[in-house]
Image (cartoon, rainbow, N blue to C red):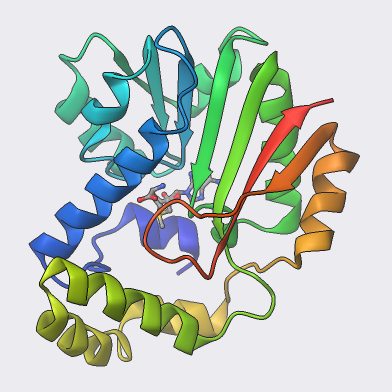
Length: 229
Ligand SMILES: C[S@@+](CC[C@H](N)C(=O)[O-])C[C@H]1O[C@@H](n2cnc3c(N)ncnc32)[C@H](O)[C@@H]1O
């Protein structure tokens, strides 16, 4: 199994429903806060189930959702098919989208599952689709120095604040034997040193800056805001 197959299948990366709901709520609020104006066109790239995407859609003119996993795309179409401000894109539709038409592209918690080459292809695609005044936000980037302790501490703090500490502790034990852990050990997650990812951004035509905060609960991970040069 590879990461694409993992995300296309059934998995349980959330310890319970409350964790899942709080996760999507937090992500949507953080993305909504990045929308610059109500007439903005926004793409959430690698959006996953995006359960609270309406919250983002209310803050912009059009929200495009794209996820590479066909099963995720199918569920998004069922969930948001009736929302006039949300468009679920296929890979072909994303590619065919008018160039320089997007104000914001967000890729949260995605590039750790991509090879360096795939991330570079995403940088080029985004550069093509963004308006000259637009911005690409790449968040939840795992620093090279990250440890298992950083992720565990972040999850337990989130769980303690969200009232699901006990399930989180049980979930951590279960994760040790999960498919996710197995893949993480076998294939690994792509990590970046801050200076290396900044070099990549500029090689692909962006001026990028690390933000003080990250999208989501894990503030030990990095977020970058990149604007076309
Ligand atoms: C950890 S989830 C993040 C989902 C969402 N962005 C969030 O923050 O909750 C990673 C998602 O990236 C998607 N993904 C993985 N590789 C991708 C690619 N090459 N292009 C687009 N999406 C991809 C997966 O299908 C999965 O839904």
